[in-house]
Length: 85
Image (cartoon, rainbow, N blue to C red; front, side):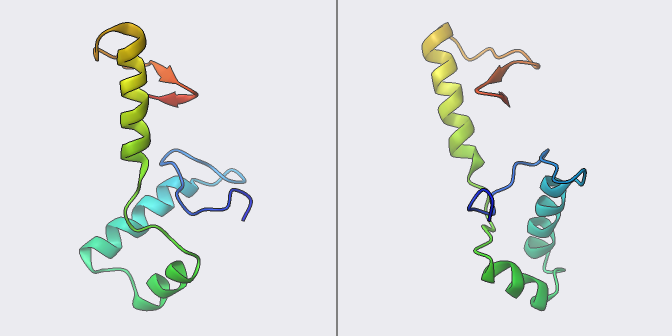
């Protein structure tokens, strides 16, 4: 409840644990049909988002980059607003 949502970035850690990786694994297992129904239900009760909405956020950052730089040739280590683009 600290952030108010369950949309965790893939590389996010919480108390030294790879929470973002765990969240991604839950989505993969759900998509493959290997996630236990009881676990899926518990995640849904927490308003878990099965489809990550980060694509739109990253696309917006890419458009911002293009507006500022005039191109979409983003270097591998470039960040926008603290996020790897």
